[in-house]
Length: 45
Image 1 (tube, rainbow, N blue to C red):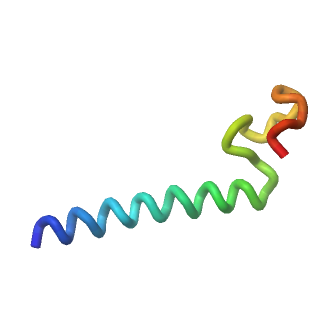
Image 2 (image 1 turned 45 degrees about the vertical axis):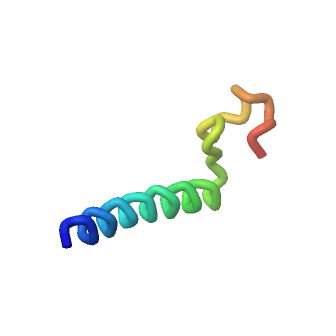
Image 3 (image 1 turned 135 degrees about the horizontal axis):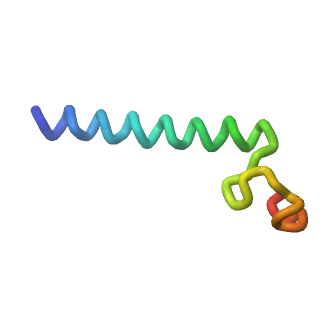
């Protein structure tokens, strides 16, 4: 039972991380350069 609960917690945390990355991507931010395309010369888009 403990393994199932731990697995659900880990899956929930992973799901939240993916959701946050998708949300940031839709807002124009990039995982690679943090939305500062002047820093990466526009390669993040």
